[in-house]
Image 1 (spheres, rainbow, N blue to C red):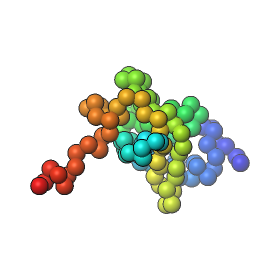
Image 2 (image 1 turned 60 degrees about the horizontal axis):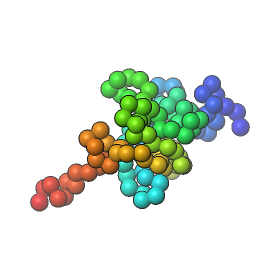
Image 3 (image 1 turned 180 degrees about the vertical axis):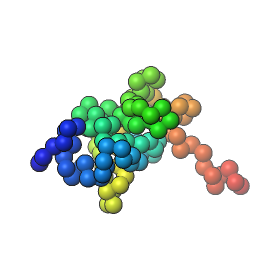
Image 4 (image 1 turned 180 degrees about the horizontal axis):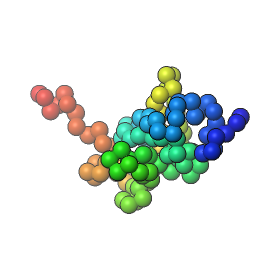
Length: 118
């Protein structure tokens, strides 16, 4: 299978369309199935993630690569990477070290709107 400059197969590269494309990447705990966070990936961050087995995202606010845990120590070690049926989103099955959320919560999805609105 032919690879591009980042070592991605053509099949994987097609979902990114070009080097500027960002796709949503949902991190999910590989044991519990709990959704941990949503971040964005580009071609380079996906290639690094697949090569290193550490979740590496694209920070839209800082406009740079972001290895999850590089400053906090709360790394995400990749167990599986799933592509959705439309080929435009990923689920990363991860071993989460520490909390996924910058607030200290395990998951960024810790606010239940149904409970809040009652």
